[in-house]
Image 1 (cartoon, protein in one colour):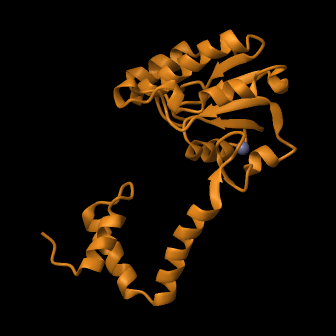
Image 2 (image 1 turned 90 degrees about the horizontal axis):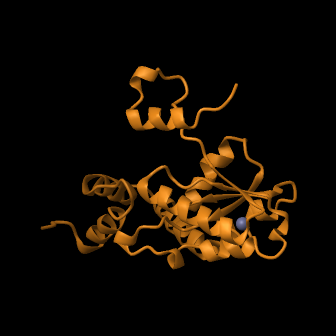
Length: 203
Ligand SMILES: [Zn+2]
C-alpha cells in the first residue's frame, strides 16, 4: 500500500491523525520536515513533548493550565460572581477574544450524548455543582455557553435543571443565538433566524 520507508510512513500516519489533515497533506508535511534542517525538526518534536509534559487541567475549572491552576482562576481581577460553562478549553479562547466577559469559566470536557455513551458522569458537571455548594462562593450567575447543537442544547438543559435544584439562588443564562453581524436577513437560514426572533430583546 505504501512505498515509503517505514520511518516516513510512521510520520505520515501520525500526522494524518491530526484534525483536518488528510493523507496528502500529511505526506506534504512529512516531506517538508524531512527536507528541513535538523534543529527545526528537533524544535517541533521538543515543543510537542513539552506541551504534553507541562500543560495539564486547572484543578478548579478544567481549563488548560501550566501548574495546578489556570491563568484565569489565578487572576485576581476576574469577576468571581459569574461562571461561564463551555464544552472544551478551546472555547475559552474565542470568548476571551471578545473582551465582553470578565468572569470565570468551567470546562465540561464535552457534551452529553447518550448515543456516543457520554453521560453526566463523564463530564465535569459534579465539579461545577461543587463550586456552587454551600454559600455558592458568591456566584450569582452561571452562563451556559455550550454549543448551539443538539448535544450542546441537551447539556445546557441538563445543567440548568441541576442548578435550579441545587443552587436556586443562582441565575442561569444561555448565550443568545443571533444573526451574523454585517449580513442580511434574507441570507440567514430559518433556524438561525427563528432563534434570533425568539431571543429578541427590548431596545
Ligand atoms: Zn481555572
